[in-house]
Length: 208
Image 1: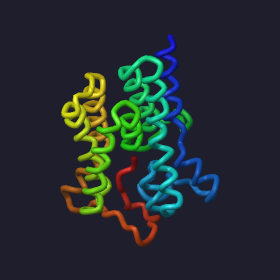
Image 2: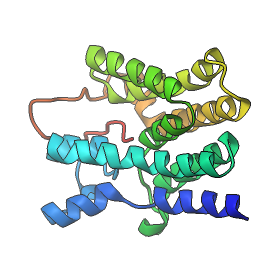
Image 3: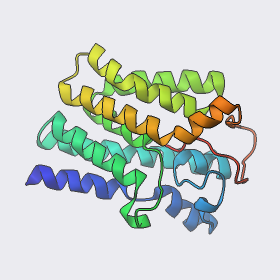
Image 4: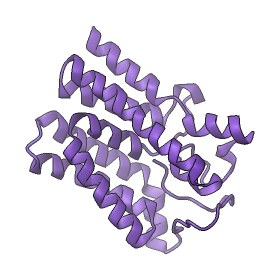
């Protein structure tokens, strides 16, 4: 019973639309009407700058980290992974947004691994940073980091729930980036720009 409540709480925590609420509170705008239309940290960062983007990144990571850590402390890695997976589901289809489109779950997946397998999370973050700095495609960095999760979990000798969760997270992130993959193949994917904010509707980056 306790384990089920932890998993349910994971979904509710994941459903908190920080990107939407913060922008609405401090800018009086609807982030869904700018950039990619997603409520994830990347779209917030692109549209409103790093002072909005960085806090949303941290809050979205916490969506996965907190429920997963509670799950680990309550019962172990299996419940931790289930709670983190529920948080990813909540981030993707938030209850508090009436199940409309949310983010692409990258940050929540990373937060989950920070709780259950921090060495895996650190290594995947390193992959994300290197690829992002080299290519400036958030989508490429996110996909590659996600795909590395099950392999890294296996290489580090993590228990089977972590490996299986890594595989599931990789598939989820890959599926949620289908549009990005199409744009990459067509050569129309936008590179991340640090120099200025973008509000145009054709800016369709990856949203953690």
